[in-house]
Image (cartoon, rainbow, N blue to C red; front, side):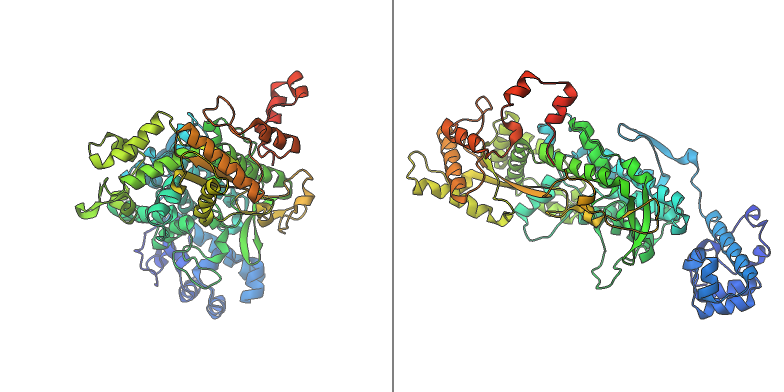
Length: 634
């Protein structure tokens, strides 16, 4: 036999209905029949009395991988089995082979599943192998990494961590996989497929650093701008380290997972492990199971269980409502072949539900993730980590002491790197950490850098982030051109943030990358254009804001920074931003006539911050109506 896996003996009960299986058990590895070669299949059919058919199968080079996919029509047209009776006998034989294979694998009974009680998904049943992964230091580390990073310092309810999010993604991944398995048996989704998808969902965030995306999107680019490191790559590295350091290889084998399955898990997290110029670069699963790669991290349109969990969990903890129903989406999902690849498609009537999903994403970014106070606290904490990087060291492999920026290359050190790095820096007696401690003290006392203004580029214009240094220079140069008195501002005293708000695919409409099916024709995938859905959907799917902060707290300096920013906006013909309001903690308000001129011209960036119209003040309406008035526009 071609398989190197040791043979598993079947019990007498499993073989009682098999004609001659006792003698064949010594010759064929039924537990591994899906890996039989064409020669193995031919020998088995010969032993079972299908002499003529065995020659046909060997001629067509039919291996064990496709046996359970063969239909009566394929046996007739592709293989050449003319007798209807023989075709039916062969199909019955292949079904029995699959049962033998399933019976030879370890079973997971309901009483061996562990139950987690989650505030979002309720009681979640978790596979024993997933439990063994959870009960490791590498996974438990996620308990100490905030899901929303610095947002907890702005939104008191945003205290949830990557740990519970990962459990939720594991649960939803298994739910969607089993839904498709039950609805479409012809997809041949195996128990191994389901388990691998669940493990990928469970481990997809193992590589996050302190304060989640603050670490990989701000800190690492500031310290090592050319290293190309991503938290997805770190998740794969940490997954390997988790298996090796906890000796879980044998546990994976015990539950029927081999090297190919482990590759499949890692490919779901970080994409193809090797760059290949082929139509199918993955090695974990064949092309006819391409839809499995869309469950945890969907690179095609962004509709995946990772987003579903963080939408539900973040909205719950932030106090933001969401109308998207992921369970309804699962009820109406089907796998259909599109352009040679099988994709997860939705029922045509669910297009509105999907627009709600992307609108929820946009709302979360606008109201929480990109909140101006949240972003400036992020900048201050990044400044802390950058200044502490050379002085606060972590013990890595073989006892080597590493900087934070070096820990990403050593999973022993990275396992120790969590949000508590901030507390350790704050409590350190090292005089070299005095400056980071000063900034942390400012954050604690809410002495934050001041936002001096916000604007938008003209319609259709998007600014690259590499232009930020030049923008700071241009704003500071206004002092010279306008001959301003007082203390001179320098570029390093300003912070410029480029804030991108979109539906997840830049300026593109993500629904254009989703395929739908109709009730009348569930086997055909079609596109649904925006104009077919509603006239009230957004015309644009992306916009950009520019925010400028001043590090100085002197009122005169802040007032000067505001004026420089205002003049810079006028020269660039950017939308004029409403100045900070009195009592908001900001100082140095621009002259009243400037704001009034903007108001009369209707040139206001954020209409939700403008005073309510007189008629709405007189007739506020019901709480539900008030809520609908403050909803963010699409």
